[in-house]
Length: 396
Image (tube, rainbow, N blue to C red; front, side, top):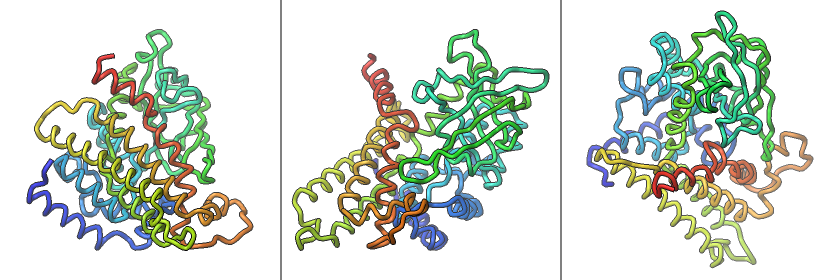
């Protein structure tokens, strides 16, 4: 992949816009690896909306910027390098494209403008207790009763449900057909009677995910997206968007540079940690792996722009990208040493009785390390991705 002069001019425009418009307090949080609040990413969402850049993957007819796939990659890369927060992916990146492909005109006209402006915030109701990577085994039911569905069951690991207004949800509408053919795709507000959202505090002490319980929730029939029993097709379409999103590695480069900066200041027996040959080897190995992810993504971009078959590359990138994320988070904790643990944000919020020590940049190292154990699990576990790669590329 070689960027054209027009691509480089676009990169300069994106870099300048982010530098001039990203709020300094948000940038500081992201570059320090700290927790970003709903208000933080929604402020950035609204800034991008006013510019017309909030939905890089949307067509111009629905308010997208009509960017090429290369421009989308450049924007994602520059945003990561500059410390811009990632927007919640569930509206712009997931349900938006699904409604464009499968929704009715009424569904599109009601929801797409509100998703674009940030008026509606969404979450994803896929995983359940016992139905994660084996999503076809889900048990949440939606039974037709008159002019509505009655939904009963529960969802687990529902990211940012406590921030959401609406949920898109896989439900079982038939027990007769094979597992995949009995699944349908519904959209409805999380404020309906009978819905309870309970926090799940992850091992970093923070609330990213939730349990969602449905007890006799009445959902109108027009909440169905596509045909009844065709939810599995829609789910696969959506997961393709989810797994390939975030292919650019700008934010990973920023995170690795943060580790290198720490290691350049922290000492080991009076010498900077970066002077330690073993630690330098770990840094170098991680940089090589990160560059390999970037080059693989670039090859996929080149193939896409040449209208060539990309194959299972989204699964390949997902596997290696999440593994590199974990490598970087491990190096961060190693670099900070004993300064890292007192900065467990969850412990501080829940009554830690010691003042934090050291620099602010240590704040998020342990929470990031702990939370990113899940990176190789969410969006389809890496084991599942390897099965996809094996089937698609090796025919096994």
